[in-house]
Length: 288
Image (cartoon, rainbow, N blue to C red; front, top):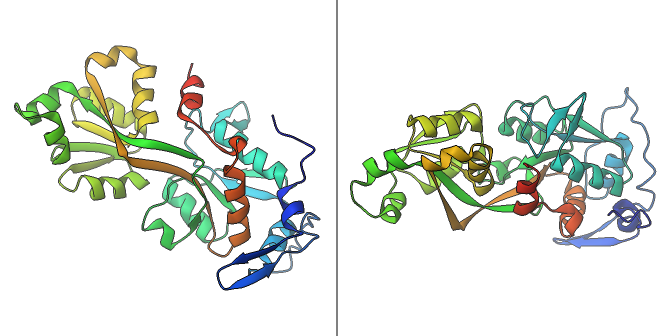
């Protein structure tokens, strides 16, 4: 339960001097006094000493989710967007004394990164750091970590293996692999399975159907999503097999503008405590 007697992050940080890099940044003690922006005044250029006040002056915290529902993380219920990551965003917004506005204009996770880079939203949620993305935006510490995982068609895998050990076949995987298009998994697939024939699909449900039908040999995402397929359709366990990789971790982080360094530090503080984290067991329980 959230302790409502705790001082907000802005209130506490507003009284500190934060030393980062080569200099000390003085944070304004009046950062919690949010003012409505003047529509006729262009936004000020962010600097280390002004970015926290700039955020307060917006009068709201704008958080981006993609338009396609992803239960249990974020989804429409009636006229409201709800879900476990929505609750994370709400808790963080309350911690910095700003009302939350959810933006679902992005259709892909890459568009979320672009909106953050263009400063059209303050935070991108359900975001995964990759080498290409960190050149455009910054990422907080991870609020959830899950192993990389494959869901495989047993019959098609046996054909590809042709008697070889499964571990050997997967290390040198050269078959067809389904991923979520325009997501971090395109980069992960090319990096971790360079010989695979990667096919992008518009949704994870489409990937699951393609694996089940044998159109592709496997689907590649994190373990929650591979387990979600079998939890949603237990009868498919006869045809499908899950393999996870303990040495490959998929991180969910908050994406923020490179300029907004103090917001990133606030998010890092937030996710360092239990109310700012999501765990596998919690996610699976929410599917019941």
